[in-house]
Image (cartoon, rainbow, N blue to C red; front, side, top):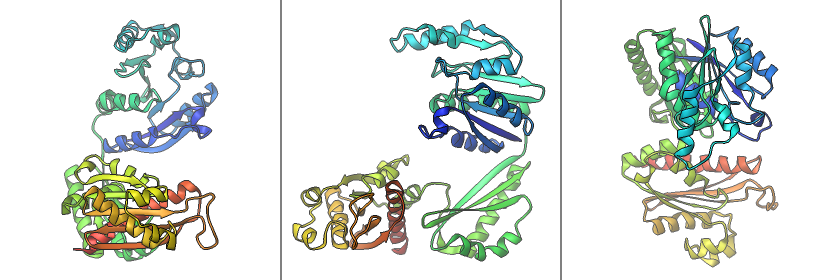
Length: 415
């Protein structure tokens, strides 16, 4: 089954807000066997909304839409949908009463703008919104279905999980399954990996596809299976994974679709190890990546953002002499930061960074993008210097991912 997603909002088109809705929606739809063939971002204009719907319905039967359902004058999605599907606006008492309870539960008074949230097209089925005031609307036109949901991510996710996906399943019945298996591979470039797996790809069953998804220092291999017999697909996927293991061996370091921090966390848990971070130029971004993983408290003890030399000295124990002789962006300093935070946080492992993220602060000897990174586990300390090119944000992100990968490599080398 194929579907499309339409995301509405001028704020998305001018870069003021990042669209996280479509990524999450596509993932959830895929888990249910729905293939998302297109994601379209459009403005709040009425003509743009109508055109996007007509275009999507020319290709698929199911369209999921978010945005433009608020109470302000720039939220035009609801009246546009009413016109498009040939209805008229009516006042829905059930929506109004629910919104009254919503406001009362928060000690707020409903104003006239919010009262109008209870106005809905008479040609839709209203799905209650338990965590907001904008009703979710289900429209049918022949075999086609459009579901309009709020642009607020939390409200959209509750609607999808609580009602929308189940309604789609009931409406369209059973259909082919889409299953994925993902392996994370290091020590290989994307092109080199493709050459190693040429024979493997040539022998893949027609129901299986292999995709290469590169990220800094890592290539994710995603096997996708489509068919109507889920048990058979799972068996084939397991067989293909074992064949990949036979070819790639220890180059596969994780068999989950996760982030690099998630893969590192899995290794730490398996080995019963703990970690802390000492960050200068990355400003806590490594700690953020690690703690974004649910359950990271089992192995993450804490972090020190040692931006100044004073903090490096007083908190992490980096000596004044080492700083004076080498500068903050240096191998001796970053290694001392790693061992210092291990002692401070009482961990078995650590990651440390010190660098120049820019756009200012570089010198001919240490230009912008110079980053020293150190990782440690027990008595073993490994460090390296990288020169990343790009914006400040890009340098921080590349240093973060490289440092995480360094520790993964160190931990796997200990086996």
